[in-house]
Image (cartoon, rainbow, N blue to C red; front, side, top):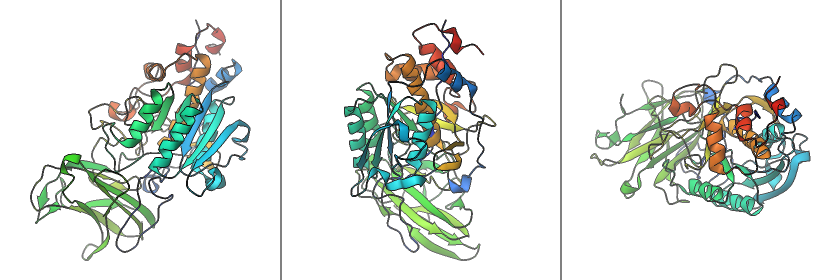
Amino acid sequence: MSSRTTLLALTAAVALLVGSIGVLATVGGTLATDDAVVDDAPPSQAVTPRTPVRGTEIERLHTAGITGAGVDVGIVDVTGFDPDHPGIADHVADTRSFSPGEGVANGGRDSHGTAAASLVSRNAPDSDLYLASVDTANGYESAVEWLVSEDVDVIVAPMSFYGKPDDGESHAADVARRATETGVVFVAPVGNLAQGHWNGTYQPVNGGVHSFDGGTRNYLRTTGQSRLRLWLSWDEAHRPEEYTAELYWTNGTAHRLVARSQPYLADSVPNERIVARLQPGTYYVRITGPANATGAHLDLESPTHTLQFQSPGSVAPPATDPSVLAVGAYDPQTGAVRPYSSGGPTGDERGGVDVVAPDGQVAATKPDGFNGTSAAAAYTAGTVALMLDANRTLSPAGVERSVTTTSGEPTGPDRLSGAGSLEPTQAVAVVHNDSNDDLSNG
């Protein structure tokens, strides 16, 4: 009986922040314009990069002829790509930029997109890569539509949209859903928000200042000078109401308003955002709104900083759609879910995480290790390409079912680790049509 074992745990831990920003005082720009910003593992939650030894499982699959041959993988990223980078140059079939005024290579040799592409091609060396560079939500939609028209088999979008509904009904999730309906396997990172997310019902005190469980201040963990990105959003039923996130500096005695969130007008969601460059010091966030309790459900999200008061339910679109293979990140050295890897439940009470995959591996443009759920998603996408090489009849639902039913021991609570750790050889084995014992021996 055939035992094919290879589903890479491509973990895209890059977060595609949505929106531009208006703040008081020191203001930092976004990494890309309008809706698209990408982050690796949050700086204040950084891990020491460690490079896991490349698994012999993947090598055995390659030796057995499972290399991703004939499988087309589309990669959508907001930092651009370097198609000539030696880590991917021999694998690039086509490129397209959906960033106004910029080419696909706008990220150059330091790009996050190039790193993600190299993880895909390392796991599936004979797959063909289609690279799409974006910097807005509309560009993301156009890129996915282009990849579908090119008849790719897998799409991985190593990005997350913040400040959006987490119930699978966001625009980004809908774009992914439409792709899977055509038969494309869509892989996405769950986001790097586990320690930077709070949600709850608006509870005002002092004439319109929200009270968290421990007071009106939600302190940030900062490490030296850093760029803060912070989103505040609320449910559609309370759209007409005004809620604002305020960023304060304090030395314990004095308090100074540093930035105030501004409405983000480029989408149809009630949300606001702050982007600010922080100097060393102590900072906290407070939320202001109506003087009386409204019953509004608020979400406060920072993919860059840890919040003092946190809540579960931090999976970000497009991973929130049920048809998407939603990937979290784990430490390959310890087996533990990364502290920044987002977890469920989603707004519609689903688990939210399908599987977790390793991050921290050396990748093109990331010689010290590629951390984050984006890296894990890219690794997983490469594994999916191997599965499709083994069985071209697989549907997106069939891929997800095979990945989750062959996963390893859970590396944490289900809401963080889903079905458990990605097991490439088992996933490939279960979908392989033929019986080749050479995949299970050795």
